[in-house]
Image: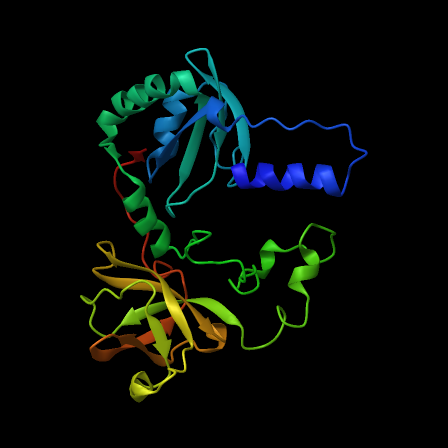
Length: 273
């Protein structure tokens, strides 16, 4: 939020100096509780009044205003876990009060609190990106293989950067998934990828990319990883190798980033954070 505010301040001072606009950050005025899981809608509908939680009335990526026992809230239907999720925004002074009500109402549903590390794992299973971890200042939405995020017939800040000769060139690093041959082996984040195991001894090593996120997935019973790889979108099914200092390179298979795509729908309790 602070970075976005900084950009808006810069544009007001350098690009649109004639606009009579004042910016005020309200981020710290809000507390947020994320309720996620197969029973999320059932739980949130018991807590929040004034909102129709039917799928057709409250679709994914929608925002609705309601209240919890008379206290105004704003509910976002978004997800960073891959499961159905609702984020309840409330005045920060009511944050703990809301948390306690969620946990109390969720007990009959088997609610469990989850933290950021669990959230990071869950999002990786779905191939959801953490900006600054799975990206850097050189990566575009096209490099993430998410062209639907960009409305090409509209004008927007940064559009020029997407269509420069270098950012639109073939062979750029793209986000992919990696599976190790040994499902118990968790790759080191930051490790470099090479085309053949013998290239690990070449100096300088001809690197194809690097591992951005790596976890052991209890839901899949194996390790998973995300990586930025040159021409990654065209390498599906290929075997590459991850270099390890002092150890033999590890063989990995390039796969799509949604590791749960083929998994049948799971059942279980909702969760709140």
